Image (cartoon, rainbow, N blue to C red):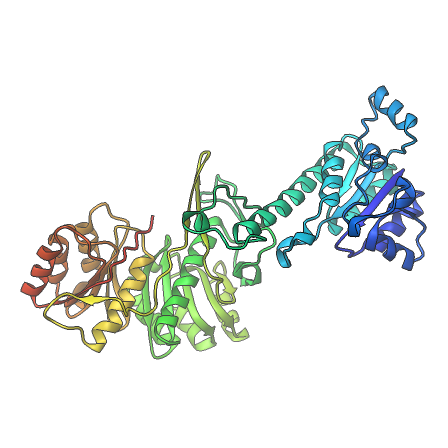
Length: 513
């Protein structure tokens, strides 16, 4: 048996090579891998010893040779292939061990590997006869099978081949992404191509298998872009049952919203309670316990089975307050004290307790259906309303500015059509996911109740008619922020002036579906 070793990630390669050597496997190595084996005293052939040709072009050409690729690609079941090997004095290669440089970590033309991907793909193509190892985590499996059976099973070679093609696909995708960002070109792509390139090569690696999908009869998993990290990778689950698809989906929405609210308020204590990706309550407070109480009071019924996101540490005092409220599916915070964990576990054994780092910035949004994908850049929301215009005779007070910003932030992260009412730093009424903006306003005012009097409201898109605004002003709302842009804007402005309220226009819509 013959094995060819040429790896960038040398984790465990010496031990793996020593294991192969002990099994009588003849080793071939190239470049830095050959040097590592030499330093370890492991007998091997250099690639140039096999090919009879020296490395050339600064290492660009070393394994691209018939004596290497003929040995990898020969189909042992075909007599003519075996004859070709014999006629050309080529020995078959039974195992290829090769992993590629993580191109995206330091991209350049010199790091575009040619020989490595070619060997990997050749071995994977011929996996009926050749094993291909592209990850140090596979070493133990390969050694175990070789020790027990003297060969690799069909199933193992198949699985290794799949992993190999995924490895080269990820590598190529990172090169395409680099070229889309400018690469060796004098300038990066401009216009539409800069945001949505002509082709998109996203490689995702499975990070976790979740408890189930959107419904219990569905299977689900969390993936991340290959080579990238996410805030979810650093999450620590302290208690509770396994996470489901919707737990992750809703917790992500909650964690991002609470950070945005805190950022807008320059670090003020913030809590968001999310149900089905929409806020049932969100609040700023003097303390986290104060913020939680206000967020819960906005809609205690909907909070049951929701996600509580706390913009800071949960101590025992806050844990006592949360535990006394409705059952939460997930509580996510920057940290928990040991006493807080003990309190919550004692009261809410099934509740998942997650501590997390701040979320990374959103990038591309990808939504698929069938063989179609919709791609867009992230919907970023300016923290400062510097471009907002007051279009009414009445001007906003400092308190209204604060509540309008909160209402706008929550509204932009709520399913359309959306209306959000805020008062005293609290989102007290949320109307989400309605076909009619008037109905969304009615739901928001009903949830706000008496708290709508003197409150501020936001609409994620313009009011096509004054009836949606009338639903808010008749409930006592005194300030509204909306994008504007309707052909009936003046009609709506006139209605606002007639009601004596403040109206701001942002010039930017924030639909969310």
